[in-house]
Length: 380
Image (cartoon, rainbow, N blue to C red):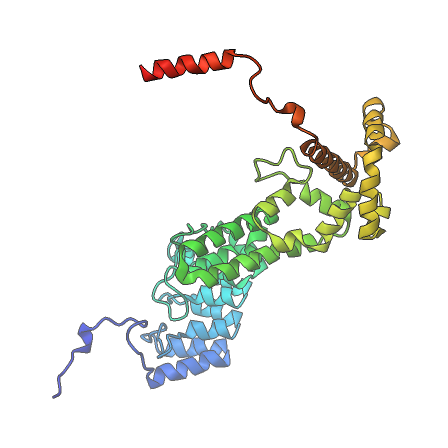
């Protein structure tokens, strides 16, 4: 059964309808693909009614071809046509990291409508709805492209964890984007990693995607600490107290924040561990080369030194020997020795003869009198 359909009544949208090029349109596409601007200009002059926005079955226009070929003169010429529709070509240029072409198309969008360059695209065959230029640049990690877009006042809002979609999170969590939006990328990486893990627990359908992003951000923070060239630079980073309210009592607030957010790779990095070890032994390198038996014997010997250490620390707290005993590793040894003394005292106290501590039977008649009196009152 056949039925005639009036095609004039159907909406012509490239994202819905499958378009087929006519012979004239195919010829025009070939001219653009060859990259000869004079030939394209001559063609359009000879065909003033030609639809320059013709779309093939893949949703590709002549401007898409010029952008894909990175043909800047062709892009500039096509954009001078009064009927040209840039569509999502600026996103293609951004994805391909073609900064000059992207700027040309963004300027054209602003000429068509001020602020249009900031709006998300719709009905694109290659990008999700509402995809913005900065989101695409951040997803692909194009550092210079992100810088250019931010100079043009593009902004990418951070999605709320329970409702954000995966691609937005990929853009926000990209290292190239993080480096340009904040002054403290390590702190931002810690916070993002924590938020992504929370989102993974909340949105179980995308658990593995969120965890992968969290691991990537965690690795980014680790890569940043790996760039430190000396122990002094690592110390400067770890002494940053921004973002952690309970850091004023600790010498390395950033390290405490990393532990709080379970940044395992950051804490376990050799640069961080080297600094922690140097502060732990505080110049007493002999402790590092002692075997476990020697360390145990040293702790036992420290028991007999505790009174001497107490007197020296109280009388001369700024002396060289006093500062040596106040190093972290020596404080640990003294604390362990003190605890062993405490356990010894508890053991001895629990095993002393307690016969003298027992009360025994009553030695007068008063207790019997009191018991009998209370018994009489109870019976009454």
